[in-house]
Amino acid sequence: MMLGQTGNTNFHSDRGINQESSRMRTKFSAKTCIQKLSKGLLPAVAAALFASSFTGCTSLTQPINGVPAKRLPKQFFPEPKADLVPVDVSILSVEPPRDYQLSGGDILGVYVEGVLPFVPPDQPPGPPPVNFPDADSTLPPSIGFPIPVQDDGTLSLPLLEPLDVEGLTLDQVRDAIRDAYIDEGILVSEKARPIVTIIRERTYNVIVVREDTSGGGNSGYIKSSDQSTTGGLVKLPAYQNDILHALVETGGLPGLNARNEVKVLRASTADKRKRADFLRAFWQQQEAARLDPCVCPPSLPDDPAVLKIPLRVKPGVVPELTTEDVTLQDGDIVYIESRDAEVFYTGGLLSPGEHMLPRDYDLDALQAMAMAGGAVGGNGRAAQGGGGGRGGGANGFGIDTSVPPGLLYILRKTPCNGQVAIEVDLAQAINDPKARPLIQPGDTLILQYKCEEEVINFGIATFFTFGIAELFNGR
Image 1 (cartoon, helix red, strand yellow):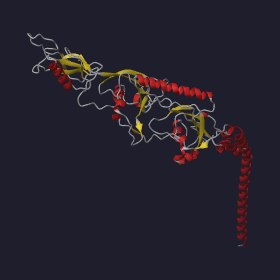
Image 2 (cartoon, helix red, strand yellow; image 1 turned 180 degrees about the vertical axis):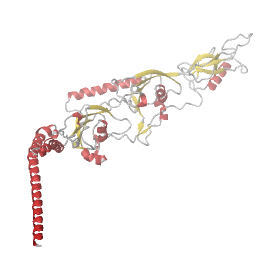
Image 3 (cartoon, one colour; image 1 turned 90 degrees about the vertical axis):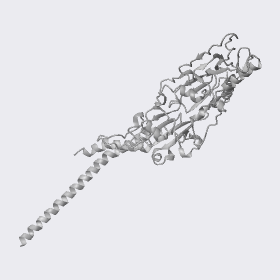
Image 4 (tube, one colour; image 1 turned 45 degrees about the horizontal axis):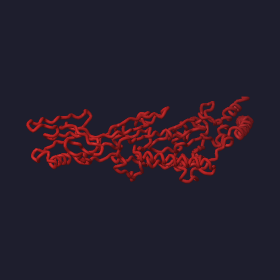
């Protein structure tokens, strides 16, 4: 009995000794591992801090004095355009009268028995001629000899003084011819039965210049290598000589390549003189401003002699246009201007380039980064094509451990050749839509790391490059 107890005691004693030895070996291995890791990491971390402080932190070596967006007044930000609505295109056309009203340039078909053409009293009158319209005309066949309405609105007929027919209808002209021949004693009332029809309506020659055809019309914007322009002479019939018909004849409303507006330049001598005087006065102001360094050169204002019609307006706003505004006369020019200048630029950690702004909706800072190929809310690998990053990215194990860049600067031009740098904290912008400024034409977007982000990325890269190797050295 005693021997059994003694053997059992020795067994438990040996087991306790083995467990204690195992714990001691575990403590020794962990301590050794930590010592090795610390020995390898401390120099690496020190090197990371040193390198980031003196060579790697672009926020220190290439500082940009930015102002947070929330501290800037409203005049530094563009008006939103996403809430704009298209105008009613019917305001660009002229409502035709119920009955066609004559004016200079119309060609009438007139037949007056015994007078036009002249027939001797002893001969029977011949039948009136029949005229068929052109293939593209909507007029019916007409009867009578062609008599044009003069530019002064008068109609010249045999044996009569010129008749003033400006603004009269065909029925009114017929009655005027009948009364004139009766009053002159040439025809008696029983035989005075003139026939008046219209052979050809007057037309107006209008020039349409468009800079929106190089990108394929309304199919979408395509940045072309040149500012291609098409233009031509359009003949518009009377009561169709308006802006809407001029656009329809040349391809429709402006496409995505063009500004959302239509310009009309009048051909009248008075309007040409106004435009010349306007430009002359503007350049005189520019010359005077150049002589005084303390004076800001004025920007070019809108020409009062050029009619600008917006095609998108705020809800409830109707452009104030009169019939004279949308009516086109001979020689008037309809101009559709390209919007090649509506671009923004990217640099820094974003791939450098020029990008077109949308025409009909807004683009904020995050959307502009996405358009330029930058990673929004993820790692910084997609954005590092522009250079400037230090460390980060995928490590040797294929794991992406980089901290994304968190600072965006928007360089925006101001009057008098000035500039303001708008600072956007991307972490705040992702969570707060109010912290995302809208992009306007001419902006330059520069993406950078914060200094602490570059230090962290360098430290992570150093750990996976040297720290892991130290753990396995001396195994």
